[in-house]
Amino acid sequence: MAAITCVYVGEEENALKLRIQIDGKTYEAEVEILDSQESAPEYPPYPPVQQTFAPAAVPQQSINVQSDGDHEKECRSPVAGMVTRVNVQAGQEVQPDGVVIVLESMKMEMQITRPQGGLVKRVLVAPGSAVRVNEVMVEFA
Figure 1 (tube, rainbow, N blue to C red):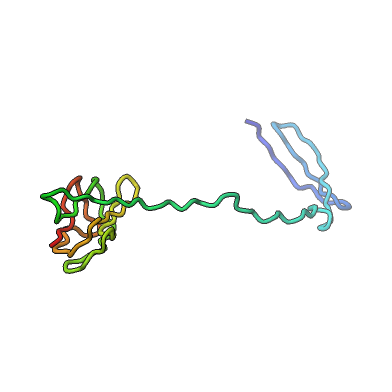
Figure 2 (cartoon, rainbow, N blue to C red; figure 1 turned 90 degrees about the vertical axis):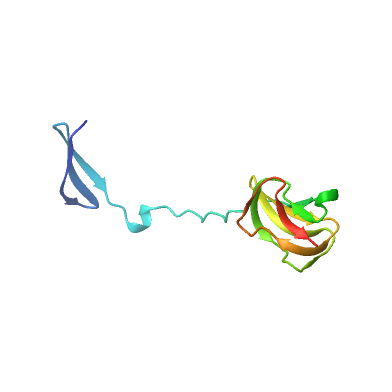
């Protein structure tokens, strides 16, 4: 590694005199002092950045939970996931294909709907609840 020493010697007409020592060898240098108008060229400002793409809107997936004979009065989870929103409460009438629950699974949001609608008897989950596949989330009267 080189040992470098720089010593200010003085000034002369628009110049600085420096003594620079590198690994024991001495060099004398003059550095020209520019006027403030000469010191930096002016460049035009950069044009504003234009957005070249628009993020696409990701549609929410809607899942119709079909009921078979014994489970006609239940809304079950079609996947394992986390309840992010409950759109119904006990005593509420749900319209056909109305969104009952919103689940998040594998970073995807799914709207769980009930094709035939009905009267909500009991809600068994809350936002933040983890559900398993086929777990009953809402009972209908």
